[in-house]
Image (tube, rainbow, N blue to C red):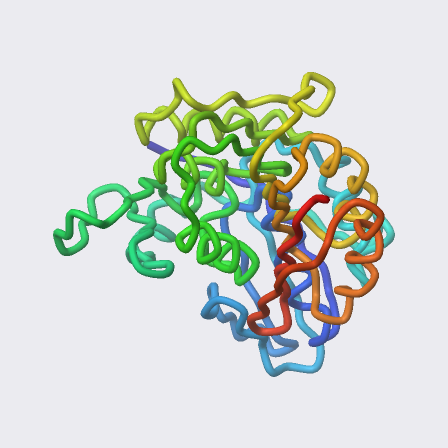
Length: 295
């Protein structure tokens, strides 16, 4: 089948390439390309890898008809893309980009037992394995970014059985689906992007746990007393959403925040200290995860 795509291109410094990558991933980019000034592409470097070029062009590939205003608004926190005229748009000729991206993707393991397995692929049999069936390129949040990996590794170490979980800023629903497959009693996936809500529901159905996952827009969300709240977003929204995230967490419940850079840790923690204790943190390639407990 012939498909068409829309490409958003921004120019950033080397130091901001990872921030641009995460922002595009959160906005639903199906694939991300880095280029230097000599037009030498590096398609999807390893998780967290940063190109060595001083100035980097970052291209995000979206489905045709993407809401450009939403993408522009979502890129305002990225230095070098904070004006609409700094974002260049291009309609890409028909090409099976999604399949090409999938062909480069392999099953990934997080911790002892948690796997992401694309369609048509398999992993060695082990009765303890927990498989998330998810194709990259169909929705953002496929475990390739360090922030997602940090959250999956945290989930892998927890006893999730019979827990009540909220995945706030769910994207593809990957964290909520992982929690459900690990035995959560119920999961609510929340996102302000209707496309993310749709993608989360589709992925939940594919993994056979749609009966335990509710996908909601923020205005419909009213959950309280969650045992675990996961929020893999960006530092600014994590700070702004602190009252919402803490309000839906029960006393003694866990809050896991990711999507922030290491240097943003203190600022984000301070937004939660009036109701939470910091009980741990982890970092990878400059990105950070915060583990909080509500008191």
